[in-house]
Image 1 (tube, rainbow, N blue to C red):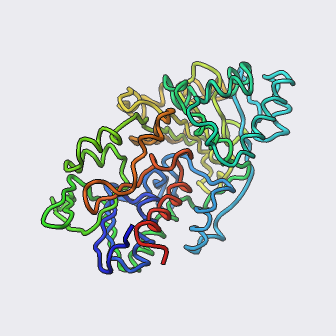
Image 2 (cartoon, one colour; image 1 turned 180 degrees about the vertical axis):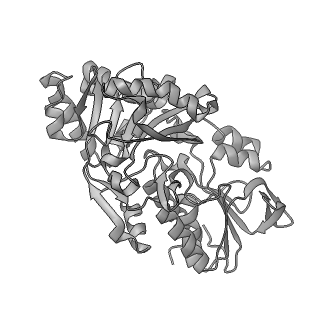
Image 3 (spheres, rainbow, N blue to C red; image 1 turned 60 degrees about the horizontal axis):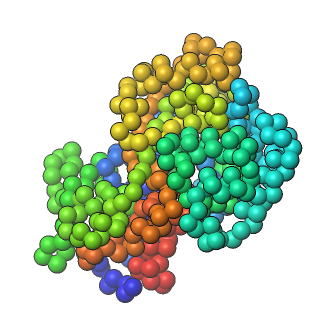
Length: 435
């Protein structure tokens, strides 16, 4: 790829990790850059909200793994390294009405819902997946079938089947094995969190961009991308009205399907190949309680009948003292974007979810709740089927100067800050050259 000449005007659509790091690296190379973001804050799916003035929490639960080297390096680069904490909070599985720790080889050996022989078998297979450097030999296979064959029917029924169904619903049996490999291969027991929340990282990125002369336009929604008169025109809706911006090069970090809607000049053959597949939206109900619900950070909900797939008790990692004594927990879901859950008011979600907390802690009473917040985001989780890889778009599109970079391209890795940052670094290296 020939690097664009000096002075090339670059528009970056989206101010999540991918968009901001792409913009930063281009601005550091001297390109005039404008970032356009619909939301009033940078951060995308990792952005936060204020529980009270100056007290931030992510809308959707987030942490880092020790293997997240790109994210860690960026935090260090921005001078926030001394604010990055590491710990190994408990991850447990709810099975048969009880919480069982399941986050290490030792805890697997004690995991009583499985017979000892199945625990040993599952441990050996996990060790194999961790040691396997690439998932190439796993291509074309589904996770459900591979796990059943390698770990056994009981391990699938007790541990992995409920997790796949919780995340992917009716599509659970279609999920590609390389995606599951990455989930096992990439994860560590040590988890990282930025003191004060990851919003600090995205504010620091936006500040660094502005210091470099870049423009970060928040609260601006892209309505159209079209090539005209030798440049790319981007129509933007802002609180002040409609505006047309001109660029020589545009990088869209929006979902491929959304980019296809915004760029009508993309040809039919491109759309047939890449405007493809399914994605679920993410939904999180966040509750503030006056006391802990569990003693675990992460609860995989493997018992049937719950309206949420995971319970993440944030203040069993960070201290409740950092949040004014509030004990904060997320009740998380991935659902089809036409699911009723996305249309419910927060109070209606609370009414549906609250009764199930007593199934986890019989002492729970609704009076423990002191606050609640509800958030949803579209296109948060691609459905990674066995033919997924064949539809991953290249960075360059058939529209000259228009590039796409989004979560669809981090395959086989799962969505997350680290792999968005890594993708941005790869894009800029290809786009602007290594120097």
